Length: 242
Image 1 (tube, rainbow, N blue to C red):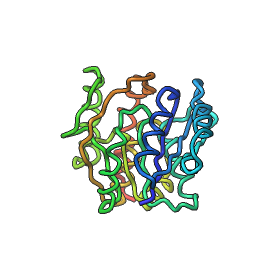
Image 2: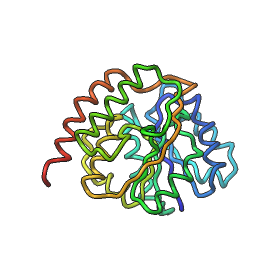
Image 3: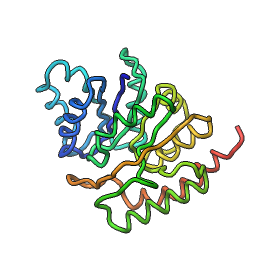
C-alpha cells in the first residue's frame, strides 16, 4: 500500500530529521511530505540539507512544502493532501501525524492494516490508550473537549482531537473538496464531522501519546479555548440538513 505521510511543522528543527529518518527506515512504501509554515527556527532549511545527504532512493521519497506564513495545522495537512493527490505515485493511503514523536511511527503498520477495511482510522488516546507527560490541566482540557464533541456530534468516536490519522485516497479526496472553515487544531474535529456526515466508515486503535521532549508545543491556550466555541459551529453544520 503506497502511502503519503504528511507532517505539518512549525519550529520543529529539533525533531524533524530524527522523525524523517525513522519513517524512511520503517517501510519502503512510505513517502513523506513536510509542510512547514516558514518556521523561524529554520525547519525547512534543516529538511533541505538533510535530504541532500540521503541516498537517491530516500531523496525521492522525501518532499517539502514551505508555506509563506503560519496558517494552522489543519491548513498544512490539507495542503499536503492536495499536493499528494496530484502526484504520479497515486498514493492509496494518506497519513497525518505530529512532528514531535508524540505519535510513535511504529503504529503506522497497524493503522494501514485497519485502513484496508475502513475509510479512515484514528490512533486514539481514549478510551484504552495512554498519555504520558501531560500536566493535569492539559489532560482535563482534552477530556472535556472530547466529551463535549462526542455529545454534540457523534458519541461513537472517542478521540476527536488527536492528529494521528489514516485515510483512504477516497476519504482524503473528499476532505479536500469540503470548505475548510477552521485551519487550526480544531480542524481535526471538523474533518471528522465531514467524514461522519457523509457516511464514511471509521475505526480507531489505542496508542500511547508521549508529550514532546524537544521544543515547545505550538498549541496556545487561546487556541484551546477558541476551539470550545468552534465546536458548536461544527456541530451545527454537522446536524444541519443538506
